[in-house]
Structures are given as C-alpha cells and as structure tokens.
Length: 373
Image: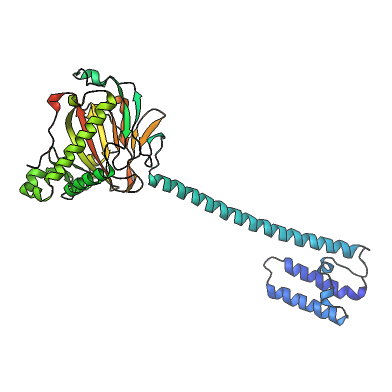
C-alpha cells in the first residue's frame, strides 16, 4: 500500500471507530463513508473496488504496513463481521427456540386443561366399561366386606357373592330416552340452585332451590297434567328388568329382592354447589349411608362426552380405581358394602341424567312402585 492512500487509510480508521462507538448514529456513518469515497475518487480509485478490510488498520510513512497487512486486516475484518453475524444468528435462533418452547408449553397446558374438562381424573387406572362399548355383561367379583354382619341376614339373598357389573342389553336406548323424559318433566317443576337435583317418584321428593318439596302435595291434581299412566308403567317395567339383571348377576332369587328407598332420578350439571345436598362427588359406601341397601343399581340416561363431561362413576380402590363411563341404557350394579366404595366425578359441562334403583333383602324395608292415582 502506497503513502498516497494514507488519507484514505486514516479516514477508514475513523469510520470504523465511528461505527463501533457506543450510541453511533447512521447519519454519522454515512457522512464518514461519503468522505472516504470522495478521497478514493480523488485518488483515482473506485470505492467499490477497495475492500472494507482495508480500513481496519492504521498506516503511516513512519509505520508502513507489513507485507501481508492488507490480507491480515481483511481476514480480521471478515472474522469480526462473521462473528457479529454469528452472534446475531444465535440470538435470533435463541428467540425462535424460546418462542417455540413457549408455544409448546401453552399447547401442553391446553391439552391438560381439555383432558380435565372432558373428564380426566387422577387415580383412575382402569375402565370397567367404555362409553363406546356395547356390553352384554361384564362382572368383576370382589371379596365381601363385613358390613353385612351388623345387619339382619336373609338366607338366599344377603350378599355372599360380592362384586360389580355392567350390562348394555337389559334396557334399550329408546327405553332410556323415554324414561329420561319422565325425569325431565318432573324436574322442570323445580330443580336445585346447586348442581345436583333429585326427583323421587316414590316419596314425591323434588329439589326446589335449596330445599325439597313433596311434588304430590305441592302440585296436587296438577301432577296428572305432567305425568301419564304410561310414564309410570314404563317406570315399573324398567325397574323389573333391572331387578332381574341384578338377581341373575349375584345368583339370588328376584322375588327375594325388594325395592327400597331412596330410589330416585338425578340430574347433575356444572353449577356450583349451594348446599351439602349438591356435593355429590364425595366417596361413600351405600350400606353405611343407607342401611337398607344390599344391592345398588344405576341406569344411565345420557352419554358421557356427548351430553356431558366429567361425571364418570368411580369405584375407589387403593392404587387401582375403576371407572364406568355412562352410556344411555347402560345398567351398572354392585353390592352395597364397603367392598364397593365409590364416588361420581364432578360434571364439568352439560347435564348428566341417571336413576338410582336400590334393593334390599329385608321385606320390612321395601317400598312399592309409584302410581299416578
């Protein structure tokens, strides 16, 4: 490099200094490089033809550059430029990675939330009956608890074979639809302020606000405009079919089983509980809660995940809970002692309809079928 380029070199150094100074402004850079271009043109050189690496070192007559100073300085400048670009690329990559990680986390949280809304529940590890199955019968035998020992025993009826079962072939989906209409008509007369309402056609109990009323007394003769004799006949027919299914499953005579109270319709939704009667989700034992129960059955009148989310029936066992997914027309049944501790999951959306039909071996604790007149 000749001394004729000294001014150009000095200007280049200043430009680099300006470019690297903290808080530099674009117009200061533009002014500096414009001055450099002017000098190059005055010396007869093309600004485009001069490598930018030329301006990364200083030269003077008393300190001439080394033979390879031009190449070294260009390599150094390219390295610096490459390092800057690499750093920028890494920062951009890091931003993209963080953005992707954030989106992934949000997606995972959304999936978990959806799973919860659709009815997932901690501790449920086995499914006795999936909603999509049509089961002629499925039964699991479990050891009987000692709950029955504290009650009067009836030979040929009191549980000696304990367990839980499900069938989808005893009650048709059309029968389930028709009997659900009975529940809907009755519950349209009242309904709980909380998430759980009941209708008991035997005693006449109906949820209204935070209390219960006797619908037969409360509505009197108007009740005949709500229900028909065909409704009550359908109710009796369904009860008899369920009773036969329970008797067969446990190897007892159907005639030794007696309908007992409470036998009732339930309607559950996601409304917040207002009273203790609305807190249906607590684990319990039917034989402890209702001493008359020996065999419990439930007829589901709506479909899990189509009509409601959550609301599955859960048999609570240490480390191995078992669930039944409701399906319209599905009958679930079990012995009522501590061998079948159970609960119902909270309903997250929609409305769940079912009817609990309970049987006792003690004829003194039996109740009659409901009648319109």
